[in-house]
Image (cartoon, rainbow, N blue to C red; front, side, top):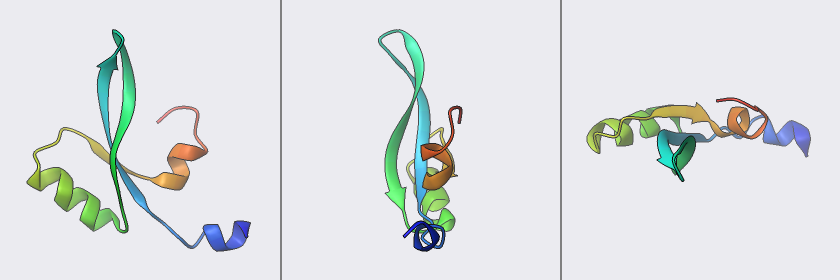
Length: 62
């Protein structure tokens, strides 16, 4: 199953915001493609970044 998961890329729109006074990353939504993520970010005027979901799950720092 690990090999199959490598082919399914989804993208997360992530913003940095204060939570309990400390900066934290928050996922706004998940998209099928990087293009859809960027389009949503730009159309909603969100100051965030699009990251591959797999890179967020397996990373200690985004």
